[in-house]
Amino acid sequence: MLLTTLVVYYYMNKFAERLRELRVEKGLSQDDLAKATGISQDAISRWELKQRTATIDNVITLANFFKVSIDYLVGMID
Image (cartoon, rainbow, N blue to C red):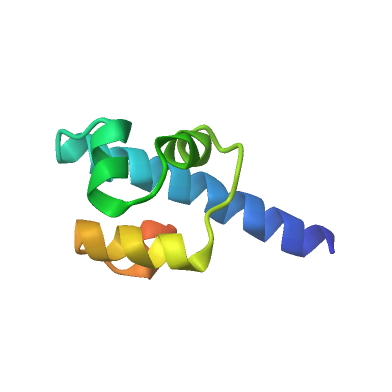
């Protein structure tokens, strides 16, 4: 149980970092990204602040939008 929690925490942090990094690289505000993906700005904010985890559907939507793999977006590969 502890190992699972640590793994989820690690990837949640990597996802938050990558999401913000990709968004900023594209010059998008959280609101711009929300409008472009149909994901709420509040959800994007909470993910970037590491307050919530994203569903797999949202991760897929974001990976497709940024044209990156899911593995990259969640920090499994560089």
